[in-house]
Image 1 (cartoon, rainbow, N blue to C red):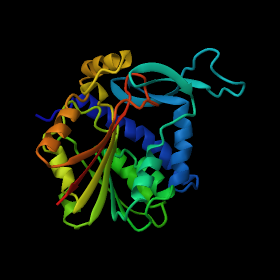
Image 2: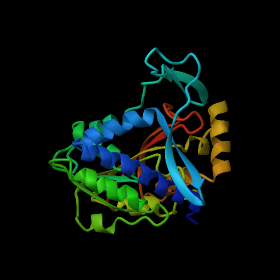
Image 3: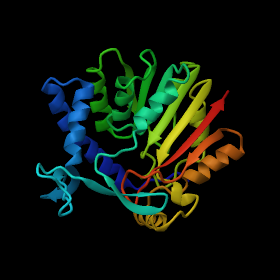
Length: 293
């Protein structure tokens, strides 16, 4: 049975509302969509969200991140950050990153896609990054997001993204539905997620069946923390598994995509476990699949 704890749904609604207020402020300063997102990304590198209660009212605020002693330069720029890779805890340069958007741009440029869909898109950062980093100009971009605040600010950003055909809509991983996109009869769609399934305790068993019908041909790419569900690569994998169990985060993503493959709903053609670059106890893994009607 598909399941997600309400505390995580509430956390994200409050979180995206706090983000949307800053993004709207940047738009009002004159930034376009891409500029506002990059300005906010810089802010987020030095701040983290914290939910507190003031006189019984829940408030989400950004507070400065703490940095390890001796791990900063003169202008207070961090040098290293902790992460995990292939099951091992390690440190990497602070400004190292796995550029998921560039990976998606390169996939899109291998063929002619007329539709790009992100599920669990937040404020649409990945979609805007794709468009401004060489993604298809004439494609239709869709962002499905659970929170109202995420859909609202993404829609405002889209109005400041000249030439981009973008639409944002409510999407729930517990009750996946892409009927309105399927009715448009796109020939080829790229569908992706990025750490949006992680807080869903259990996704619906028909998740991949629903998504695979979004177009005549669908390419799926997922950067999600599911490595611990498949193989223990090292001590970080064990910490990852314990962290997800404690928080009631995703427990069945691998089970559901393996079932979809066995039932020939999708065909897997790529799998990379625990590529790192993120939180040391929440490493992303990559899944690639495709389907044809």
